[in-house]
Image (cartoon, rainbow, N blue to C red):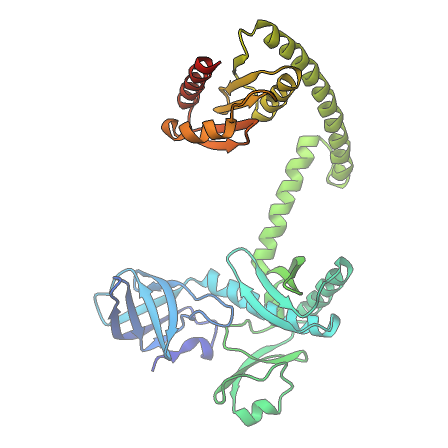
Length: 393
């Protein structure tokens, strides 16, 4: 059986060992079993470690029927190997797993809520707690409390106990295993049955930043980041804030007031633009109606958005019993609309012919729209539809 170095010390980064077995699966994936390993496999909400066996990358680590399998790009050439962890990844997992234990303990104490599950992802970590909601003021109080415990730098230890010894400890939840039960203890805070890797004192967690809380199937999911991830989150936020301050030529303290003012200015400009567009559409509708021959109105726009074409088409079909066919060169969109008396089914026409021009879209009997990958396909369909409509006009 493989000796699990990560149980002796989570701080083992490099070691020498021997390959005891090689496994090649039918799907072509290759695995090795080591005499000793510090590579932690997936388990308990914690992702596996990665790293290298000699110079060969370790791509995955899994526990199958008590055996730890290390997925590698190829088999090492020799049996005696030197292994090295991706330490940044391992320490990040240690910070977040210890952080989760501390956060869960404070959730129980401060919010009277038991932790139901834990997930450590690439971007953030989450816990689901037995609360239907967690208001912002409680989230803030929880964050202050958990960080207070970090600053106290409480000792974190791990050890194995028997089932009888475990029963005597104030565990939040009794473990499913019955022997060689591993306990992770945060001094003065909690005892928890856990097989993960942890820091040696809460100070090494660095900090815990609670990002948000949201309802999840009758419970509450809390998103958080610890340590270096939390620092990167802060730095990213400061970079955005600095960019906004420079963009609006104001201090960080006054940026919210400046954005509120800018938002008001944009709403005013949008209202003015809407009024200008309405005037322009009224003029253009009058001209298109005057210049039409028969009931078909066709027009190609250089850069008119689909929404504006829809508004203009609606104005035209409200004023007269016409068929409207528009194309926009900017976004490769074609629009077809009809007035109330026409028997044309716009959506059905598009559905019947769009595939021939690599277009996608649809609509109702009265209005349909389609998008195309390029301007050539859009114009080709526009001209085809125009000829088709002219022949039945």
